[in-house]
Length: 382
Image: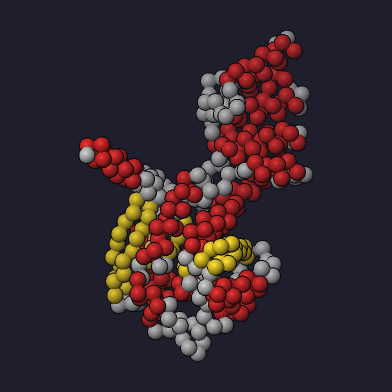
């Protein structure tokens, strides 16, 4: 019994050290009722007081919140996406009225129109005013609610930056209206659509029709992703679609991978340092996040610059690393290599020596720097 209690206590301590789940009641003037919210704040939200976070709005939170929140926490832990605030709207049986649309024009009507305004005019401003948010929002829905989030595409500009539509139960004409609307949108839109081979037949067919049209749209500000999961049912596709959607929407955010290194960096004709700058500029532009450049990304681009013999690019990467991580020795190695290659051995030796008392970085050890400095001494008799 004591062992069981100890395990339970350890589990609770672990939970308290991870992401925070808040339960709130929100009175909506638009709906004239109170709605229950589940809100997951990122790990260390209270201590990272200068950090802002994207928002993920989850409809059907009665059953969608946990899979979305769990994937957000997991993927952000491994830096496959930024830490984000997940907001779940509890709907229960009210989901049918919440998603109501007019029988003539097929846009939100009655309770559906009120729910549409509740999300855009009340809920999102409330989250922005009470939490530290970045200007990037995603909406997630399943069947009825997956249909509903599409209506926000017709606002100008659209309310959300990203849409995760899982087996949508599309309103009439929407499979035609969405492809017609997308080209007119000037802002960047990320759109993920999913079905499964064992999905409800009518929903699978209309999803495939929508996909056939969306995949033909070719414009820079529309990022489209589609999955048809083999063997997935209407409900099991959700657990496969959510991580796929988040990974694809935030693909540019991830650290530079081995595949990216081999297939992109090593085949570049343009300066590698520009690739690094562009990556983080894109992260800031798209997601509103001013993140420091990761050590991993400095190492990947600098290694590529060495292999490609882009010495000026290596100098620029070393200079950026010195500004951002002055206590690490990687900038001394990169700048030392630059001076070696341009024929300034004395500067190279002193630069290598400058990293002796700094923190080691990955393969860049103090012994490596000493060996390089000593070799220059021997070769040139300094």
